[in-house]
Image (cartoon, rainbow, N blue to C red):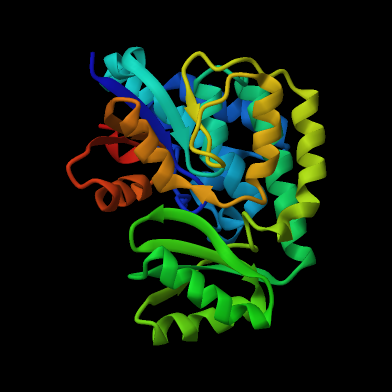
Length: 305
């Protein structure tokens, strides 16, 4: 029996307008946004619909917005390709998307997952505000060369690989001065640096102050063993023990995202069909660089007839 994995996007996939068509067409999706607004204390669908862009891009808003929009997009799959949900054998999500994957796998309830994501986004925003920092996508360089570039830039502050996305696309993260230095060093090495519009140095020790609040909220919610394996960003393995899941979600904030390794692990486990659910097509773009022949579909607002 062919295996299918659902993949959920992370921060960076958000955009003004996401979730609107889904909520308009599917009452169950609209209900998720209504529930979310009560938990968050603001009208999430209105922010998704109207922005402004600066607000939807802020970490404290983009994380819950992506979580809710992605789970709402499952209603499209339920309508257009219900067999996909029945046949899904695995799930994974990029950074924030790991929480969406765990909610899909029923390890977390929708409400509890949103409460955790709310605290995570706020805590990561606070950590970013405390230390001027950022992230830079480095294209066209292999891992060894990016490590060399980081080593050279490290005299300006902390800088390290934060996202192993796909061949030729790695993201480095660190102190602001080091991020500025890495741009010129990467260009000299033949790379194409792209500074990212993010609040700070995610997936590095700069986020350490966010881990305590995240651990507290994770300890306060009920986590069950997932009904299907969810591949973790931290080690590209699945975890069934709730205590282990809590621990690995805390580590994820300060640990590099092993996305390419996670996708290759799913392939090793026999997954032949991937389905990206949620805003944008970021994961499909990465998949083309990991395995151009991989079968992959997308379900988001653009799929709504």
